[in-house]
Image 1 (cartoon, rainbow, N blue to C red):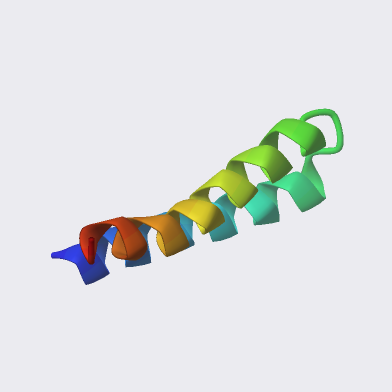
Image 2 (tube, rainbow, N blue to C red; image 1 turned 45 degrees about the horizontal axis):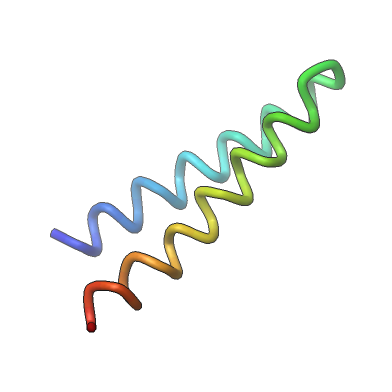
Length: 50
C-alpha cells in the first residue's frame, strides 16, 4: 500500500516538473509542487517507520 502511494507521488511530481518545462507563466508554482511531492516520497516512509 505504501509503495503505491510513493509511486503515485513520484508520478505526480514528474508530471508537475514536466508541465513546468512547457508552461513558463506557472513555472514557479509547478516547481514548488514537484519539490513538495518529491519530499513527501521521502518523508512518508520515514514517518511510517517511527
